[in-house]
Structures are given as C-alpha cells and as structure tokens.
Image 1 (cartoon, rainbow, N blue to C red):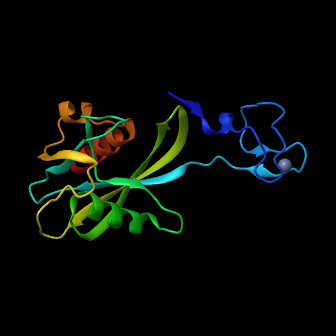
Image 2 (spheres, protein in one colour):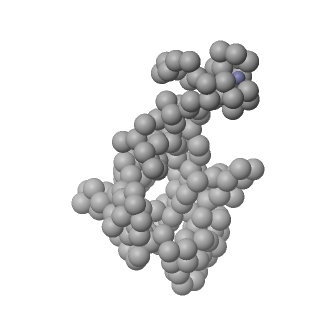
Length: 176
Ligand SMILES: [Zn+2]
C-alpha cells in the first residue's frame, strides 16, 4: 500500500502556502486562503464481456499492478468523458472490438498505487456485448486472453479485489 494522495498533499494549489498540519480529513483546507481540495475518488470502468455460452473474457495483465494476474477490459475515465464513452474507448483500445450495447452492473471501491501514492478509485462495471470480430490486444496492456467460466479459482486470479467482487456479483446474480 502507498501513502494516500490526501496525505501526500504538502502545499496549497491556490496560493502555495505550505500545509501546516496533517489531519486525516477530506477535503484539504488551506490555513491562509481557505482554498479546499477534495480528494474524491477518480472514476474507472470495467467491462464484463460475455459470449453466448455465458463465458467471460478476461485478460492476462502485462504490467504491474497485478502483472501476470487476470483483469478485464477497462481503465480510467478521462476528463470530460462519460463512463459509457470511457468503456467503449477502453474496450476498443484493449481488445480491438466495438461495443454494441452495455448495461450498468455494479460499482466497487478500489485504489491504485503508483510510485508510492495510493489513489482512491471508484470502479463502475458494465455488462457489455461486443460486435463480432477478432480480438486484438492492441495497446500492450495484456499478454493473452481467455474465455472462461467464473469459477472460484478464476476469481482468485483477478488482480484487483474490486474486479473479483464485481464478477462474483455478476455470476451470483445470473444464478438467481
Ligand atoms: Zn492557500
């Protein structure tokens, strides 16, 4: 785990005044100019791509965090982008397929540790139908892919707990 982004904040972004004390509260408030910075989570999306036999497409991660473990197509939402647009873009970027339809599934709390700083993340998951086509691992974020049933063993291989929880929710809601 890294240090939380809120904790690593040392200067007011509005006036440059050094932070005088660290209190584990959000938002950060500058003691000189009263500027506030909110440390809300950044948004990310994940795609549950299923085939007509109920198997799900998972990707073997090429990079840390979770190198060699399983992930799903997805990524961070860009500024000015909707969750749906981010999902369409990420699926196309990562597996080379066009999203035909999508339906909101659930959300999970996540964090992304990069260079010692832990970024709070809200993951939003969608069930996705893709157009027919050949999967191409376009952007190098995955080394291979599998179509798989969601067994407990497969879920254990997920790189992120949030992904595991969302897939378990998907699997269990289909069984009801
Ligand atoms: Zn200030």
